[in-house]
Image (cartoon, rainbow, N blue to C red; front, top):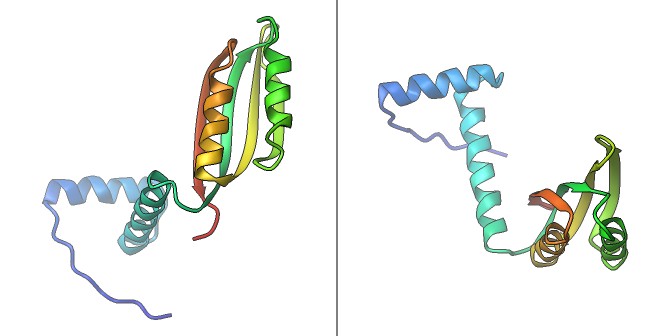
Length: 135
């Protein structure tokens, strides 16, 4: 696979900040850092268009003492076996639990599942992070 060279013009302050960033992130070259930024932008663009399959995590924190929350979460997860690959459950303290749900499928289905879970009474926080399943 070949590569093509391109030129980029940057203001000195912007380049200095970029160089500090890539040094802190342990990149060996500007080119690799720029390639990663381009890949990320392309993936995010595809995800925003809700095209294709994604894979990722839904991380939630919930209060298990809220009436019915655990049962609602369990029922919803069982209803979405095709989107849920695995879950990890951690007890934060006497009231709160953290779950990391590994999800896969069409962006529309994964987003719908995440929104349904985050809307359950007792779920205090939820964040869906996805990437393209194939790129």
